[in-house]
Length: 114
Image (cartoon, rainbow, N blue to C red; front, side, top):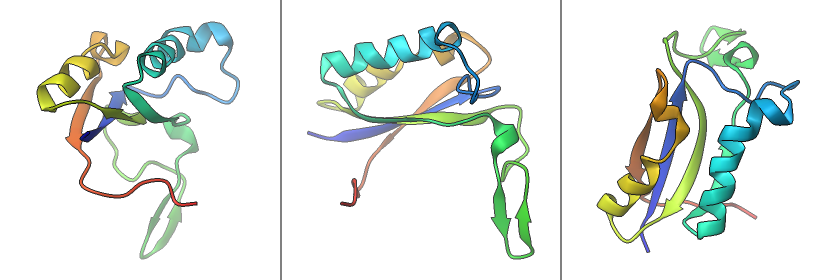
């Protein structure tokens, strides 16, 4: 079955190191629903942009690689019959109700390396 990466864009990640269960109830609840449905096969929530470090030829900086209004707050992988099904699943992400959104991309290759 094809896999699709869903990149979550938001003004920042809700997953701060000191985030409470209440802070994370909506994004984690959504992830729990997708996992229970069997559609989501992997997920990663990123910490806020203030913790980002970027590496370029001239060294390391304490900032995101790209200065933008929205950042990638996380990513998950779905298995879906086709692109239309993947888009329908991704459209349930709570990030689309705010200033952010999601990007859906067909996974070409790769996987977890043991």
